[in-house]
Image 1: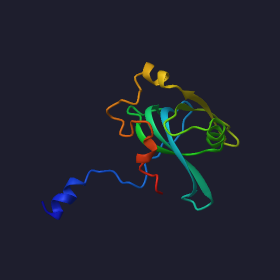
Image 2: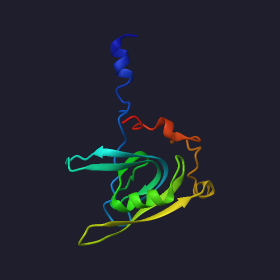
Image 3: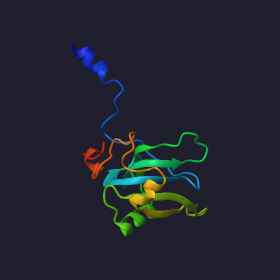
Image 4: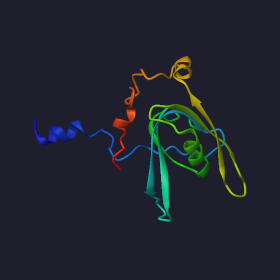
Length: 151
């Protein structure tokens, strides 16, 4: 084996600096996810301040117009209401929940979300339990393997 073989064997591996973004754009966009953690103090692209990122493992999702809605590790930049919900519910890594964009104020563009914490029995009833083969973070504390944990 030479260096070229090593590079070839890693060419399709994802980067370790984060996860794809999940954007709530249309009313009804939603996901069922496992909470991985929150990161604060992230510099925004526009450089106008700092943001908080919500890291999740999406088990199922719906996006208007998307025939293959995303699953797997994703990051959501928290809106004011998402931040309020996360602070209120105090999720721990591995906790499951539903988050759905419920409304957008036409004047202020304030987004309101539906939130529901789920039990393991809820996930099992819909076939979304921790033992799925396509869930790379399955287990009691998946946050240890989160791609963006060292950012």
